Image 1: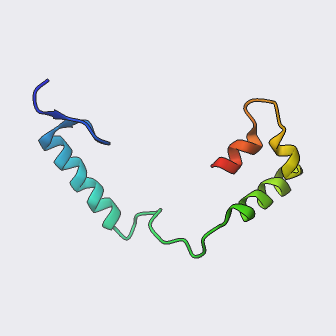
Image 2: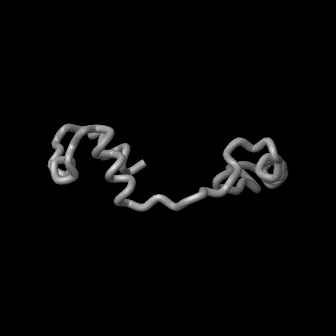
Length: 78
């Protein structure tokens, strides 16, 4: 393949430019549903408190979980 570039978009130069222009238009649009700043940063302790409350498990017990995949650990990581 000649003139094919890779990044987060794979393709020839013209295709990449077109997709980047589309992306720019979407991000700048007021209709972009995920656009906006977080109102307050969330700390690790707040995340862990929420996870332990949701799953009814202590933090120390969560560290010892053996079953895979651990939905509790996945939720905390996410």
